[in-house]
Picture 1: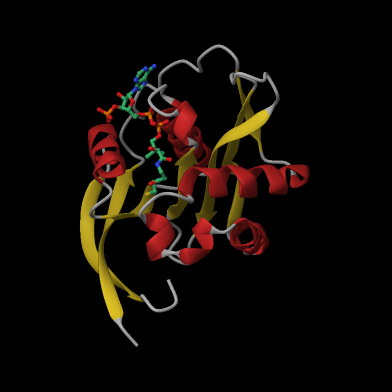
Picture 2: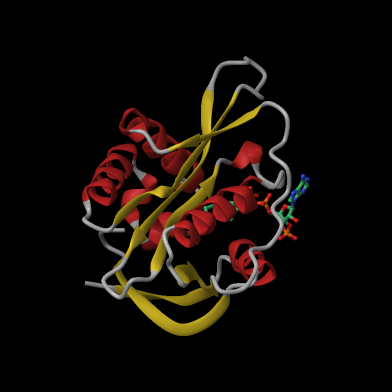
Amino acid sequence: MTLTYFKRFRMEYDLGQPLYEPPELPAGYWLLSWDERLVEGHAVAKFESFRFELDANVFPCLGDLEGCHRLVREIFSRPGFLPQATWLVGTQNNPSKRFEYCGTIQGIRDDRGIGSIQNLGVTPAHRGRGLGQILLWHALRGFTDLGIERSSLEVTAQNSKALELYQRLGFRTTKTVYKAIDVAFA
Ligand SMILES: CC(C)(COP(=O)(O)OP(=O)(O)OC[C@H]1O[C@@H](n2cnc3c(N)ncnc32)[C@H](O)[C@@H]1OP(=O)(O)O)[C@@H](O)C(=O)NCCC(=O)NCCS
């Protein structure tokens, strides 16, 4: 067994402060609130967002479509799952104009009552247009609407793009954790 340790930061957002101003949803994108029929959409958007990213090494299920299906089903069946903090983005902004899912976020209330963000992901072709900030804003807004006072997420330290985005939006690092992966199976 060869273990590799990935450094990750736990970050928190104080929902007592005013929420940041999200960018406007760009033309040609649709924001979809939670619906049971969108399980497949969340799984596909998650897979396409993470399959070539560092986090697919940290959590191998993210690099596998069936693994993403299992993961979203598991998230949606948890007692703390929050439909109000779970959003999907769809678009036809692609050369073939076919509809595709291009962004996903899910929220749960953990056992300490904190609104926990699960796997924010935007597919590569649709990044840098504000979709990440929009999805995160809607999840945070879902938490505040439910009276939740704090939100948290975990980000891999080497994921500088995501880390900088979270810092800029007002998340603060509260803890450093190490995730051990057996590279023989990763
Ligand atoms: C992290 C991630 C979700 C960000 O999604 P995104 O849609 O690109 O995020 P945004 O567009 O809201 O913000 C990203 C950058 O684009 C910029 N941006 C925002 N709106 C923009 C617009 N209309 N036009 C151009 N750029 C814009 C933002 O200012 C931000 O700049 P920064 O790089 O200086 O921080 C995405 O890169 C991703 O899915 N990565 C892989 C999965 C992953 O690692 N997820 C995080 C797990 S913790």
